[in-house]
Image (cartoon, rainbow, N blue to C red; front, side, top):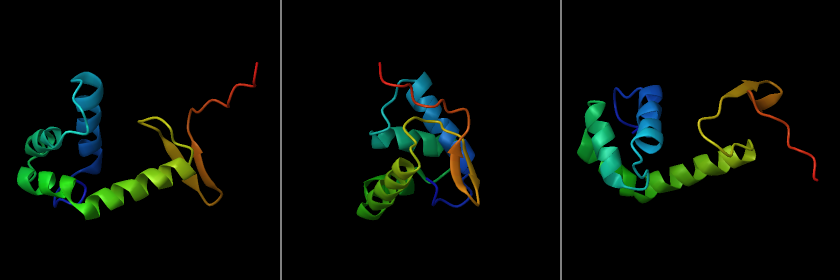
Length: 98
């Protein structure tokens, strides 16, 4: 969806979070993205085509690798990015072993 003209990435992220956490919809289902695209006034056919494209899947894998490098393991996560790196806001330090 982020490559569609006129999309608000924040609105798209909110719609995906709502689909998953509130509506219990699978974010592995292209039809969920079709519905979200329609709700956001985007080209639903283009969004579902992009969902299945190898290029989009490669972008998604790269995004997840980048998030793992930042130690993001839950969503949503708020990051503060500075010249010194990225810190998770509100993150608790790991608990010591028992």
